[in-house]
Length: 423
Image (cartoon, rainbow, N blue to C red; front, side, top):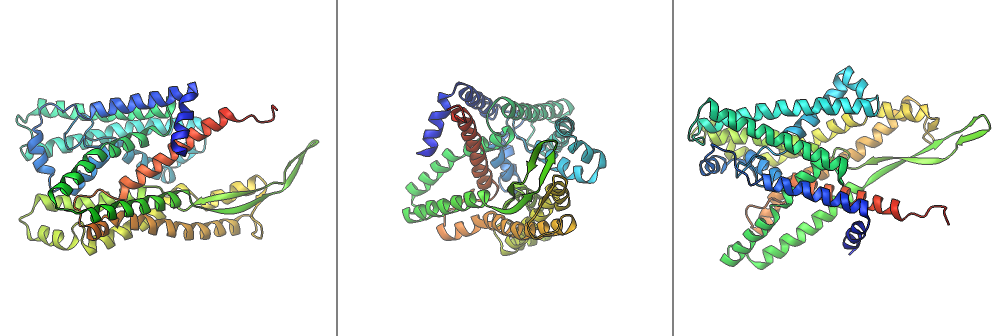
């Protein structure tokens, strides 16, 4: 009810209504483009090629079915995500990028421009690789330089257009544009998923109790994801009073929030790409003994796969959290503005304390991400319902984007309805 009331209130505000309608229009363009096929590709043969490929299935989930139909948006926004992740990592390594990141808005604009160029380069490499692979497996009826060039240019143009749509949503719409496009792609698969469940229920392959159990587990998991995404450890910070002229500044007490899930969904994407790539390679060499050994003992759903996958997620969570949040810089900024942690000396002791607390909080968030990522295996065992895209990246993205978008809508409504000290 609160969600419905919030949306009703949002459409009553003209500026917010314009933002929401603009966002919906951009998402509509994305969904229309997801059904426009790339010329020169045999979609039936392509579907046979990806039928056993978990890596390609992962891409199709992110693309909202556009990859399976090989539309102009087949690569979705994945090259932009990869470019953004790599640029964030390079910002810590390359001094020039680190300097730009500290220059404020102008520096961020430069980094965004570099990210765009890098996205186009990654999209070109990925499109060339996909085209050559499809040509080798006979998914392109008339392979040739001109046909491959048309396919590559179409795919790169589709990814570039999606990047532009996402930036337009961020600037003129509501919410983070790139995240909303991924959200729309994942949610668009929901009706077909419900239809498949209905067909299985009607055919008798699953029963009502299994379906109710699935709904119950899904509700618990969504509640847990919301709780962890909103959870944070607040470290109290005290600012000393400063006298500047006749004015007295500071003297207040605030807190430093450390989120439980500081890294978001990035560790799951990293780990998924690493774990799915060898399995995809093995599916291309099914007659090989090594490939059969890997599929039998390290394939998706096996105990070894789940353990390695979980460990990779935990490791990447610590790594990415350390990249995006440096305790030394945080401690220096607190000291710079005259702040201190009660009972902790400023400088290095403060940085060590923040790092210690952050590691403990990150451990809880990393374990939670690992549990969510391997959850489909346990859901399959409990419900006996096959082909469930449940948990993992999709669930975290959907819940996270929904929460972030609703927060932005609520902040706009609060800003419009706040009376302040007028009365």
